Image (cartoon, rainbow, N blue to C red; front, side, top):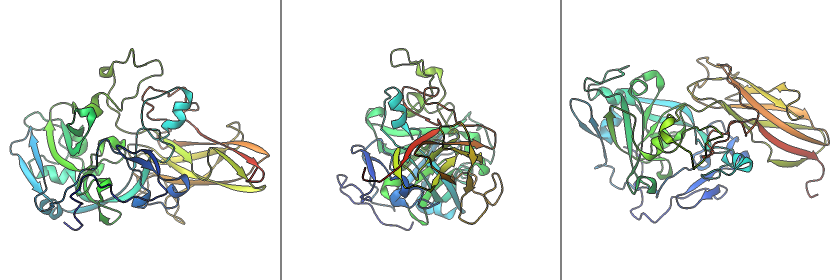
Length: 393
């Protein structure tokens, strides 16, 4: 396994870019600025959002590090990094997004509980590693299996990471076995990010990457994989990251009535402007990102400069100069799309963006319609305000 060993002192935090906006220090949660986020289609590791539920684990003996595979299978197995690296290496370009992205805006409608994220709790990386489907074949689970002979229907990922919500136990999550064994789903046990070994913040030495699904299921610092009959019973599967209607509050919530959130809905945000900006007279560039879960491409991004009364279609692209065609083999199906539009701004304007995916799912107009007590999945139209004038006024 290439790479460096983590420091042996748990109190030492990994080095981080000084421009990151720190939303919580313990555990550490931070996002880049809007402009940094869209400076590159592949997000530099420095500008990839940092999401943690506990202290950053340290693995300082890579030779002894292993991942155990057990549960409802015939034979358990311990996999060392050398075993995983012997499997065919695959690279997958995939955007991970925290379910709480854009929570701060939702909290302005009504108070919500959770880390206050702006619009940059996501990032796009080229992940390198072994396909989970290939790993599961090592313990006798064939491609496209939906149940093992012993009744296993779900794959649980358990982290080295310890968190208070699990009463000091490990962070954990699961996905259906049918997704895990489907090579087309591109679920990885990743040991590289953008061509380099994972760093500590992003799961060194090994993490799960589940494309098209909220980031909470892409477990970092992998410790073990369990084949289980039902969904993982962990806190973050059963008592968090579920989408409730606006009528539910902390007095009447019943967590068991909702399924754990998996795919993220269609989303877009304007990154070239702040919530309130002063611009010079003339044309301005409106740039941002759009994405949808489950591998659904972006069919259209609409931009309005009059609060949503009239619309113009924005240009979409992934790589500069390469036409983006949703669902085409030339496009990255698990990755975001950048959009761009030009507009002449009147004296003041409310600029709005909304995306439509290939299944014709469209972002809802208002925050109130998707408000929920945990502030997840704010996919409402993204709005910014601009006025023409001098920046120092």
